[in-house]
Image (cartoon, rainbow, N blue to C red):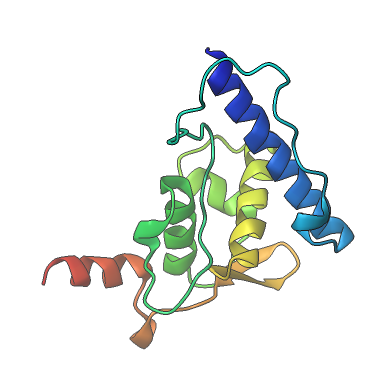
Length: 151
């Protein structure tokens, strides 16, 4: 791994940590200390830096479909949309093809909470998740996407 890539990864990690800490403390992200450049800089940093490991879950808005979500997040939304009621993380894990072990359940619970924060799901009871935006006429997310793609 090259120095530029290592520096880029460190920058992304620090910005992410600063953002999380700012959200927890109620500060504005701009108030956090800026990241200092390395003292000795021999070459220019490429203008197009590839971010490794970043997963983007956009905030839901009208007209946005699950196609914009990373695969595992899309699978979670579709499983919940197809369910007859709200679901717990331990019920979702086997349905998205993961082993029902504590680590997978907790990881999925984190993804569920992120989707609640971003407006894709609601937590109607503690630990129970449901679609935030059910399809008109009670259709599932899958059937909505299938109908849209067949036109």
